Amino acid sequence: MTDPTDFLEIARQIDAFIKPEAEGRQARTRERILRAATELFVAYGYRKTSIDDIAGAARVAKGTVYLYYGNKAELLLHAIALQKQQYLIELAPAFDHSRTPQDRLREMIRLGIVLSRRMPLVQRSTSGDHEIEEVLREVDAQTIAQVNEMQMAYVARLLDAATAGEWPQELVEKRAEVLIDLMFAVANGGRLVREGMPLEEYAEVVAGVIARGIVEPAG
Image (cartoon, rainbow, N blue to C red; front, side, top):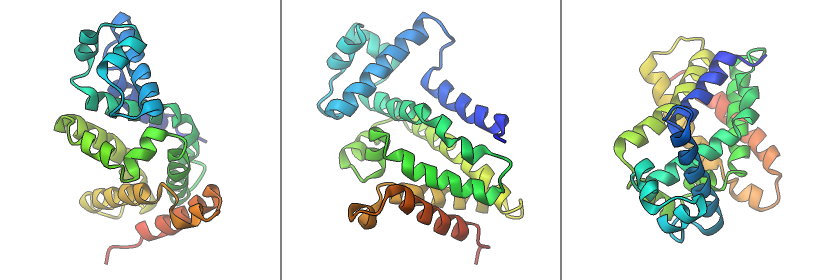
């Protein structure tokens, strides 16, 4: 069965990042701005979307956008988080504690590859899109650190379980970072998918290979 503690904690972290205010008028305004920006980034790209465009789509003044987001790059980072939140429920099999930790690890990798193709902004951020990479360098370092910590927390916890808690924490965190990099590197499918291999099949094979290798004892 799905562990509600793990699942709800991941959901809480993403929600707190996207909506730091308590429920109310400010939270609704922030959400309206973020959803407008996300739709425009997907439809027209980051560079072709201006703060004026976002303000108009969200029906707020331009200055209001800057009350909630320091710059457009910060908005993009939150838009990527919003897309991840929208597909979080589909990651439920990776939280299913009726499966072994190794199986959950493999499911997390498989679903991460498959779902990234349904999230345009996430896909662009993992595909070597130079525009996105350049933009993310403009984001405040503390915000980037917060996002990286959210990404790694569950991966490290799952990897620790998959190795029966026998590794030192430093090694678990290093392997978790490598695993996240590997998932990003293969998220776009590579040559086999371009040549017609179904993404689901590709993701299944890749997940098995990575999951087995990542839990091998350190040499």
